[in-house]
Image (cartoon, rainbow, N blue to C red; front, side):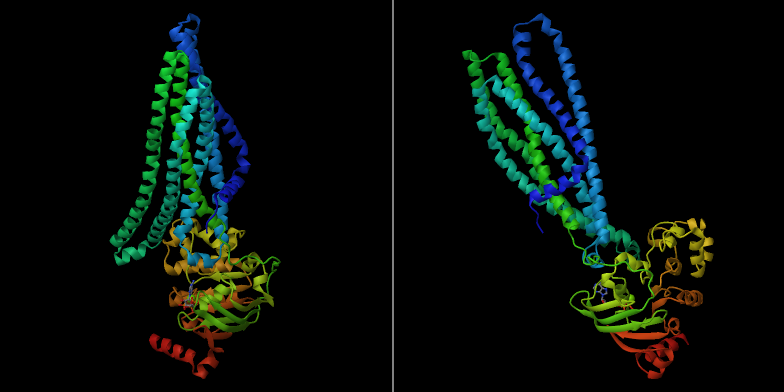
Length: 579
Ligand SMILES: Nc1ncnc2c1ncn2[C@@H]1O[C@H](COP(=O)(O)OP(=O)(O)OP(=O)(O)O)[C@@H](O)[C@H]1O
Ligand SMILES: [Mg+2]
């Protein structure tokens, strides 16, 4: 996906609109700064002609006053300009980051399984950051230097237009190489930022997987991987620096041609009496003072190129469409009864079909167990009900309504999920449980914990419910984490309860207890339980045995045992194992 610069500018402008006041203030102040510079060049003439050569006594005392006055003007102007333009830049960054974050939160699970977390992180942190620096630079430097340049040009032409014309014919020669340099910088920055994304990804991944790295002793391998990416990043930055550093010398060397010619001709004209020493001094001062702004202006164009590269990556993510969004006329569901129907559902994550012509009806209040070999599609069914993904064919109905036409928010309100992968936030136990229903009172949180048999161990922790449990809950045992997740789901108090291997990490005794609690909880709720341990699903109203995305048998425990199919074989095996 490639954007043209015009589109990128328009979108950046959209974000700066709320802060235009700051921008205008900074613009005004920048005129003051360049005004002071231009006045300096202009004042060289009277200084040379009247003070140095004619030695007018009255003017001598004015010199320090003027010098200090100009410095004050310039200083105040520069302060106001820098402060307001940089804060405007940061405010824009803040807004873009917020939008980008909200947008990525709204993207579907499909996007996150396709792209790496580090990549998304890098765009939100690095690229938006790069954008701010350059957006501010462009406005600060670009504006001020353009004003200064225009003012100095006028001074130069006033001093002697013939000389000035010669200078301005020779000067633009420097512009062409500068623009070539700029384009190179843009290309390399884009590639550089992409490798920065890889770097963030490696970092994020290794920190998240630090335990696996330690367990397999692969620290050296990971360090090498990081080094490789880091080197690649340096590689691109080096190219950027090569062109960036070349910009100034190229311009200086090329413009020295002009300066040489101009000085030679200028001195010639002074000796002819066509201009005063003061005029020539003013002219040379103006010309020399043009160096700095010209230099910075070419830098500005480089930063613009660099920021366009970053902007492209930012808006690429911003324009990523969520595969799953609320339908235009989606309705909010009120509290559901919980009749679930899968009707001829076909689903695949990619090429390989996971579910084919899948049908399943669950009546309100029923407990249905999904069992079967790993990879059979059990978690996929749970995910489809949550609308993490949409099926390619067929419909999923709850209370007769296609979930595609419900608002996602109201659908989620009706579902409590305990996922196969427990995830807890690095926060207190209380807040982690409260995640199930944000407005729940403390007493309700504790009641949910009691039902999940989590209350006792939570209370034995140093700060009880206020204990912070570390990244992803590392300070808890696997079984404790699961019980917190179950408490979270209990607190949600939703009509549909989805338990994907929710008790797999519990010992037999606590499983039995949690199971008892869940039995109470399942009353008046529709529950889908996924479990490998068949002892946990024996009491389900209906057991659905899945193999390769197809239902191979259904019935209750007795019926399935009598049937002598896959379920009875699995049950036999687990039974033998235990004895
Ligand atoms: N995000 C994904 N992208 C691509 N393929 C996936 C994804 N998640 C699962 N699959 C594939 O879909 C199939 C069904 O996976 P699913 O997680 O539903 O199995 P499961 O029955 O829950 O297995 P388990 O008992 O091990 O949890 C598997 O072949 C798996 O490789
Ligand atoms: Mg699973």
